[in-house]
Structure formats: C-alpha cells, structure tokens
Length: 618
Image (cartoon, rainbow, N blue to C red; front, side, top):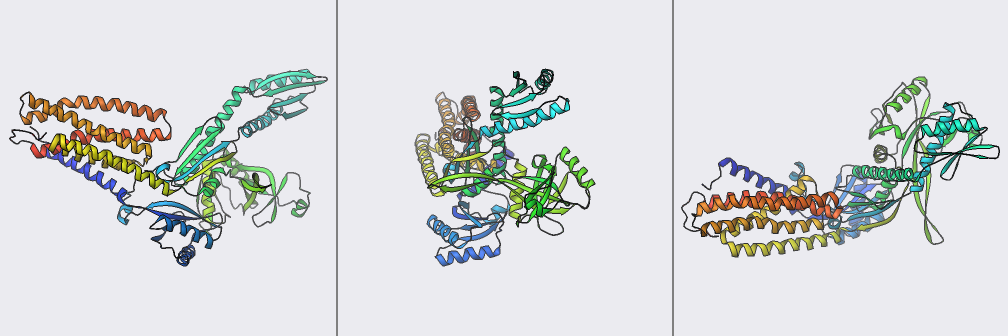
C-alpha cells in the first residue's frame, strides 16, 4: 500500500542530489579581495601583476592568491579583511593613478566547480556590501532639448510650406515667430497647429509685427519629463548590465530622481564614470581644401569647423555630419584584423546606412574623421567648497582614407587601448542619456558590514530551525525526525534554486526563509495529526499513513495557495526589499510542497511501507 515505484524513488533521489550539488558552492568562504582595473588609456598586464606582488611583499601583507580574470581585471585574495585594507593602501601607494582598486568579496571555489558553471547565491547590498547612489535628473534640460528640437522643426515646416516669416526665436518656454503680414501669420499658425499637435499655437499683433507663439502645455511638459526619466533609467540599466554586476536595482524615486543599488560594487569612481558619461560619435569628412593655419588664427572657412586630435594637432572638418551616435544600433569592441589595434565595430540603422553609403561612394580616396564627444564632470574647490562643472569634450581620435564604399557595418580605430574600446562600445550600445544627471547622494557599504548581517541572519535561521527540530522530535518522535530531515532538505533546495536562478538574497529574503521553516513544518503537522486521528478511530497503521497524506493534501494546498497569492501581490506592488522577501517566500512554498509531502512520504514508505505494524512512532 505505502510504497513508491522505483522510478519515483530514483527521481526524488536525483532531485535531492542535484539540490545538494547546486547548494554546495555556498559552503565555501567569501575571500576579502581587491579587484584592480585599468583606467582610460591603460591595461592590466603581466608587468602590473609583478608590481602588485612586489608592493604587497614590501608592505608585508600576506596574499592568498593573485589571478588575472577576463576583461583585463586583476583579483588579489586575502585571508582577512585587515590584510585587504592594508593591501589596498600598499597598492595605491605603489601603482600609478592609471589603475583603480575596488574592495570586493570573491568565492574561493574549486576549479571543477567553476568549470561546470556552479556558483554561490548572489547576495544583496545589505549582505554583500556595495554602492547606493541617488541620481538627480535635470528636467529643465530635458524641456530645453524638446524646445530646441521644435525650434528647428518649426523653421523647416514653414520653409517647406513656403510661408514667409521674419524670425523664429525662442523666449523662455515658448517659440516666437514674427511675420510681415496677417495673411502669412494666419497661414503659419494653421500649418503649425496641424503639424505640431503637442504645441499650443496662439496669434497676436504688436504694432506692425504679426506674431505666432508656440508653447508646450503643462500636460506635454509632464510627458517630456516622464519620458526623460524613463529613458535615463533604461540607459543606466543597460550600462550597469554591461558592467557585469549581478542583480542591480535601478528604480524611480519621486518626480526627478533615480536610485541605483549595485551589490558587490566597491568602486564609486568607476560607477560615476560609466553612469554619468554621455558619449557619442560623429563621422565627418575632412576639409582638405581649407587652411588649418588660418582656422587656428580664427579665420575658419565657411562650412568647416576646427577640431583637435588627441595629440593636440589641429584638423579642419566639414560642418555637415555624415551620421551621429543616435543612428548607431549596436557597437562592440574588438581588434582590427590587419593592424591588431583596438577597434569599435559599429552597426547603423537603415537611414544612417544609406547616408554613409552615399557619402563614401561619392568620396572614395578622401579622408574621413571620427569625432568622439563626451560630457565630462569635474569637481573643483572654489572658496573651500566643491563645485561641479560639466564641459563638452570633442576629440578626433581617428582619421582614415575611404578606400571603398561601406554602409551598415564598419569599424573605427585609433583608440588608446582595448579598455577604452570596451568603454566606448558600452556607452554607444547603451544609448545616450535623455537629460543630464547629477549624483546627489552616494553611500558605499563595505563587505565587513555585510558579513555582520550575514552572521546575524544565519544565527536567526539556526535558532528558528533548532527550536522547530526540538519540538518536532519530542512531540512526533520518529515521524518528527523525518519531518526535521525534510525541513533541512527544504532549506538546501531554497538555496539551490536561488543560486540556479541567479536570484539575490537579502535580509528580507532571510526573513522569508525563517517564515518558510514554520510553514514547511506546518504541512507535516497537518499530516501527522491526521494519521493520529485515523489511528484513534481504529484504522490500521498502513491505512492511517495513506489516509493521513491523502486527506491532509487539500488543506495543505489551500494554505500554500493563499500564501502564494499574497507573495505574488507583494512582488507585483512592492519595491526592492519587499520583492526579495516575496521571491524567497515563493520559492520556499514550492520547495516545501515537494519536501513535506513527496520526500517525507518516500522516507516513511522506505521505513514502514508494506510491513506488519501494530503501532506507529507518531
């Protein structure tokens, strides 16, 4: 009666073994480590490894291991946090400013685990440490950009309709168009109202001047602000994902702010460099006819613009842009097939590809330049107060002769290093920010504080588990010990699923684990009490076991489904910490259904199935 078929027992055993294997990496320690990356224009090489090793030896700091990782990163492991801090001081004193150091934690896994892709759970900001940043979005700049676009579109529309006008200017939050007569004014107002439905168009007269005012209504201004904020969130998420940080949290806060939480990141400089950068490219033809010397002296030819290459050499380029960064659909870093130098491979959209093909077809044999444009924010001390200033930097980093026509895909060379090529491709691929941003709050949580949270959370789980184990063992005897065994298995499976899904464990997640312990054993309590009731009414032990599991199943499912509905609502409407609690609770509900019903039944079947029993140790 109470016996599973062989295939079912083997399936349960396979699930248990797989869970143990996936949870195994979490038993290994997280070593205090330092991650070294190269700043712009530098690379981590074997010489860098030697410098780091020599600096640590001279400072008398013991090292557990040094390894070079993918992406040009150097990881130094230490046995204690005190050695980690001393090592960072020694490295920063010895290495030049071209290298950045970041404190982190790194799991000390065996090679075979890494080879098959096993890894421990991702830990949240409160457990692992990391960076918490609050970003303010310049909404006024977003409105200014929208008005500037409308300003150019208004001029183009009036010219296309062949409506004569005197001037088109911008005064604050409105566009003012002056006409010579009322007929032109009325025609212009009618054309603009039909073409620009998002603008409020009004006509007026000031003496002999006939005016049309176009302005953005409040509802449209709010739409522009909301779009700028959402676009910036999307762009920041793309950039953070490209950095390889596990489970970043990027969320809107209020009307104009964005909160970014990066677990495990310990390098605010690197973060601000990537998040705040607004890089793009422009492709322009070189003006080979104009005089560079005259341009430097202030006599720039009409239709051209003076630029400077990275080495400071002046160069004259055509004002007309071939393609811009917003026409780039994808970008990746690599190396030039002929010279082996770092390169960025660029893909253009349909319009940009046609434009590039037409220009390169007409200008074979002529030079074309690539202009790198970036807004850089620097902090200077003025009157003993830090003052942030943002300046637009335009550099020509590549000038090459057009050998043959090309269109949608091509490469750009002339970069200083593969690290710069990677960063440039990252910024181009993630898109430009819709409005400028400024970091207004920044907190770095060290790994040592995270370890304290882990220790306290683990202690709470052990206390809760220990009390449940003692109660179940005393009250339900052998059956209670089986329930304790599957309860431990339930915790193992939760950890395994979190690691396999790449989910992040936070302090609220640990709270979800503690709650799951009580809910998981509750299912066994219902089953065992039902078995007791069946025995009291005179059923045989074997029939009581079968009836206990069968009759308690509906109550267990009802209880778990109602809790699951609450967890889904918490995940749908909650924020970061609440979502972490909901995820862990949901996983715990699903695993407890398997362990409390299927696994405990399998264990009881193996011990008492198809045996003549007079009593049950329950």
